[in-house]
Length: 75
Image 1 (tube, helix red, strand yellow):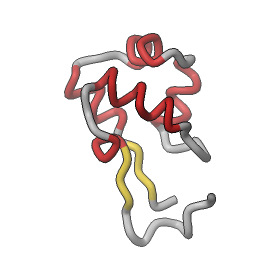
Image 2 (cartoon, helix red, strand yellow; image 1 turned 90 degrees about the vertical axis):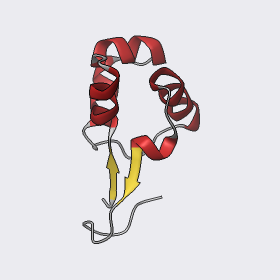
Image 3 (spheres, one colour; image 1 turned 60 degrees about the vertical axis):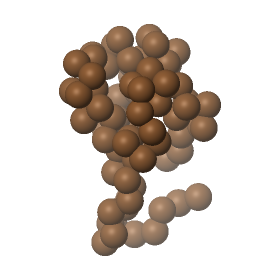
Image 4 (cartoon, rainbow, N blue to C red; image 1 turned 90 degrees about the horizontal axis):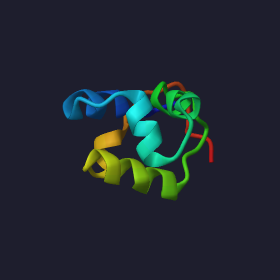
């Protein structure tokens, strides 16, 4: 998919663990890992907003489009 998830970059910048972020956002560490590793098919805007609030960032800091990915995004 041509969308890259950069949650790990923001976690490193904020010196925060996956477990701490999951707790702050209110999702399981397993579900956060699915999103973080780019295996999620979708993300709710409420979850994206909670991630941005917890990491003090913008959605564009977490998601980016890379041309030439492995096909069109589903949706």
